[in-house]
Length: 342
Image (cartoon, rainbow, N blue to C red; front, side, top):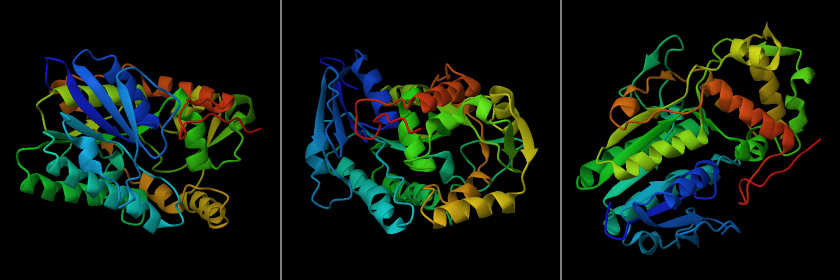
């Protein structure tokens, strides 16, 4: 990163969950001279030393090379979770759009590409121990999200061979939450009309305890800090990012004052599949299948080499998110607009 007047960082998906957190950190960073945020819609939010460009990565007409010229790093965060009933649409944005980003990084001679991969890129793995970044990244093929994340891992394998002079970082975070993303994530996974106040503890006397439902969570701001450190680092490769401890029904039950009740996988999946099939639930049963198979991640490399540590526990992350869910919390960007239902 240049040190005279500060470097230039371009962020795709800059108005989303991770993007808004990262832009805030970069704006406060004295080593960053300017930030260019790319999003489908330019927000009213105007932090200092940030310029916006309206760019749709799904469009073949997007001039990404022009957007990336002179950049010291491109952080690629843009991702479309919906429509889950039309995987070809998400493929156009997530896979073909990402490949356009990779090609434009090379054409614009940007020295560093930091890509948002995911725990979802990993092949099925253990729930009783952690795996490091060498675990296979073939995803769960039946879930579009995992399939797309895994495909891009292979695309980056080829990209690194073709462009050895470009530093490539693959961030593989756990599930990311913050207060301001509560309304967006409710719409993405629970549906536009799911009432946020249903997350109140007094309305949840029991909690489904589904075998295999043990995952990791991380505050979005903590993930953004890892991205910021990667911008300034000379390291490449993959980094697992997650908070502690792992989240399961027992932990959630203690947090909400609810009693975990064992629910067989087939029963839970059938209910999700029925709601998804009737377009009542955006989250697909295929993603549910994948979540039950995701491995727990070892984040030692991020701790020791990137000198990254999350500031919040998983319990603190979920407590903040649930409060935001109850209150319809959001932010001043189109993806994160707050909305309270019920």
